[in-house]
Image (cartoon, rainbow, N blue to C red; front, side):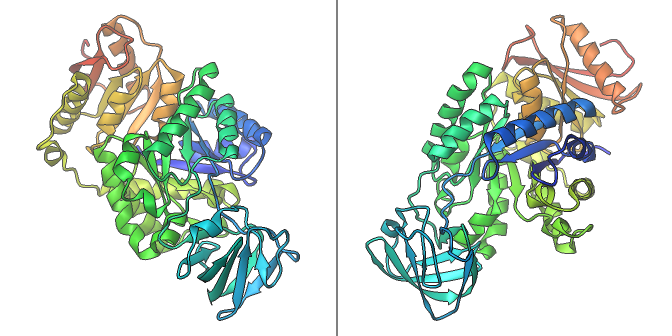
Amino acid sequence: MHRATKIVATIGPASSTQDILLQMIQAGADVVRLNFSHGTADDHRQRAEFVREAARQAGREVGIMADLQGPKIRVGKFENGKTTLIAGNTFILDAECELGNDDRVGLDYKDLPRDLKPGDTLLLNDGLIVLNVARVIGTEIHTVVKIGGDLSNNKGINRQGGGLTAPALTAKDMEDIRTAMSLGADYVAVSFPKNATDMEMARQLANIAGAPYGIKPKMIAKIERAEAIPALQGILEASDGIMVARGDLAVEVGNAAVPALQKRMIKMARDANKFVITATQMMESMIHAPVPTRAEVSDVANAVLDGTDAVMLSAESAAGKYPVQTIETMAAICVEAEKSEHVELDKDFLDRTFTRIDQSIAMGALFTAYHLGAKAIVALTESGSTALWMSRHWTHVPIFALTPRTGSERAMAIYRNVTSLQLDTSSDRDIALAQALEVVVGKGYAARGDMVVLTVGEPMGQAGGTNTLKIVRVGEPV
């Protein structure tokens, strides 16, 4: 069954062997995420090699995403590994404290005291612990515990409403970008960007680091700061895609605000011709259980119905007991949700103007395929832009993007409703179109007599050169 929504699977201790990775790809993983918050450069390099080999064995390319740690603001370590905070008691966050105890703990972000004032609310450990700031004295933040609990080493800190000044790119991130480019990452996900400038800087660093390897990765902005919401349009314009990172975002803006923000972000991304990933706790219970909760099934399905390009697994596939089964389950939910998706193609095209020839051809192919009941759209593309534009609108007609470039094939792995395939196309248009049809028929997506819509650029081999739309019936001359 054709599945339009893509699956991003994080790899970690539960999924770092070539055998498990092969099973994950066969189960439906389209993009593999390397979480640079954990592991060494050598760990990531070895995992990337395993992914490439597993993909080769599976007979298809998958994308690799390098997810940068960013300025995760955390408490330091405790003498005994943790302490228990009790509501009503005082507790000190001290930038100069070496080892914490029951009264205070250190900070890995030394400038935190400068960002705070009395009355601020701090949320620790993903919001499970709440501290009210009473006063700031030098390097010490004196707080009163509003909601207590166990606080252990290196737990995260957020300020309610956002406003922390930590830069989006740390020295570690800059080194990790170099590592990511050396192992051939197709996407770089930037944590905690506040504005377009953060993304532009990250892109510049990635392009410089990728130049020796011939790589220009797609840049993904993880939307997880309150300040990123009003700056979202600029961030979108500076990125290739965004991630709705619901964990830290929920802590900063409140859980109740996230579902509406998710819908808004997905719509904004699609309108801006950018891809979008929905992430965090999508199948959380499957870390330990072989089946998801009904709420998790609805959560994944609703993200699909919102129009997300991809849904993402974190600990479920990185450290869970059932990484392969979780992907299979998620894939099945996506397919069922897509069956009920309503097509509003004509409405989508109202009041739109297309100034580029290649974009106009892409939209024309969608419109034609939908109204003529074509079995497939086949786009011969160099860069993948034609397939991206087509994938912004839902038609129930599968899109096949055939490219001679391995990098483009992997980059398109995340686009909704796009199956990317490598085809060493002939420079002769008619031969290339015939080859493209053979691929789609060989994959079982079209049979003799079926109508297929083809797009191609003449002369062949130029990025952004799509200028021809052709309608053919399989078995008849191209």
